[in-house]
Amino acid sequence: MTVNKVILIGRLGNDPDVRTGQDNRVVTRISLGTNLVWNDRNTGERREETEWHRVVFFGRTAEVARDYLKKGAQVYVEGRLKTNKYQDKDGIEKYSTDIIAETLKMLGSKGDSDSGSGYSRESTSNQRPSRSSGTGYGTGSSSTRPDAPNVGSSHSDVDFVVDDFPF
Image (cartoon, rainbow, N blue to C red; front, top):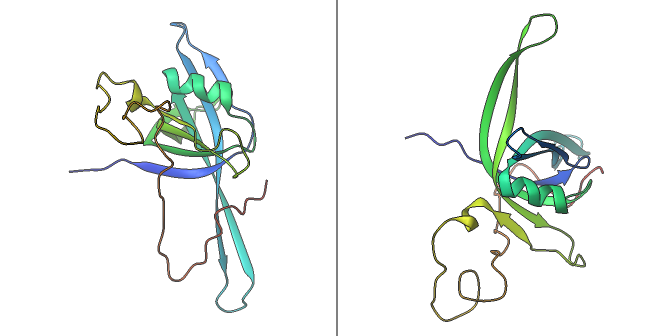
């Protein structure tokens, strides 16, 4: 068994780049920044490292990203890694790795009106929603979007500050 799964929470470094293919299929690309913040054990100094990820959306998810995402927006993305090989203008082989997004969830601060909204390709499947009584996703409530996932981490050597982004 193998697993190719990526889960990220980060902020857009710029507005989405949207392209439409010959078959009118929408492709949206974003640059997603994630931060690792920690205190140096020896000096006690606060350290920060930002990693930029290239994320690509296709189809309906691309349309949602195009219509609702802007620079600085905080999002939750699930997808898979895809490495592409190409030749630059000098004929040198190069590689680039993208995240092919399968799930997009728009996050935000507590005051944001669209906080907790999201879109997942799985929500367009042919499965019928659950008809059980209760509240939440798939129970006939007015919202067809799932709640934000509970993403946690347990790194004893590192202190994380989730909402601490340099932009």
